[in-house]
Length: 341
Image 1 (cartoon, rainbow, N blue to C red):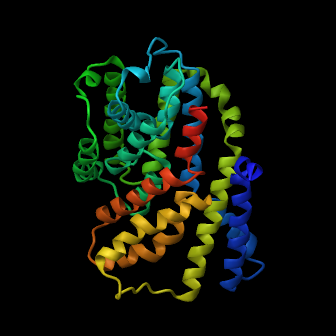
Image 2 (cartoon, rainbow, N blue to C red):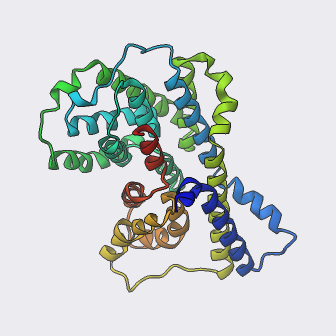
Image 3 (spheres, rainbow, N blue to C red):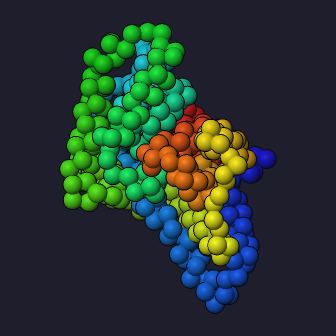
């Protein structure tokens, strides 16, 4: 079991490729075309691979930053809800790198549970993570303000449920103000760039990570080969996830699959991705795999029910949030574990 936990990404990668080969076989794929299809699948999540590289460069820049060196984060001085709010705001400029960012500012060990909760909550108002950015692009969404206004009531309700201490003191802290300013810069950058390039959110966000990395430490460019090597298992994993996703789509097409679940009510159709599918993540299945496999089956049905693309995005985001907090192999979990020792 310990061996599986240590090498789960490589083991799951092999399993994904085996399943993909089986699905290609079911789809009656010509053996001559198989290597080409596998190559197509390996770059099926090309935006994800670029995002991961940019995130690794950002993590390296955060650990070797040449500015904000006097900035400190002391978790013991903040309440649980204040930490969640700080993590939510920090997710705008740093995405999945929030726990790495706060860990780098802290002299003591940190509890990453409230940080993970705040970061995942941010996905409802902004595609702050790898998976949410991929879903955002998958549905062809481009309006960040619309998503923000749509998700704000949900996020506010999450924080009001267990609010025990006023958050005003946090909003006056130097750390909160700096992260908020960086988040606003990121938001303004994306809104401006979206005027010329309406889609490709993940690529635009990856570029921002690289820009902010160079601002933190220009010498980080020399560490790019190290960042590539450090993320090698993650690259392999998501390349294999892409092969599996590509094989699923190829198989569905070969069946001429027509999604028709008229016997399912709207409530049941929404409950399946929110409550049922995330449970599969406890079996070392990455949340993005669940979306890649099940979205082609369920999303057309949700569209047929008259649900808007934005609402469907939020449905899948809630699935990802639930799955990320359950999955032992989500990047949220992996980063949280590494940053909390």
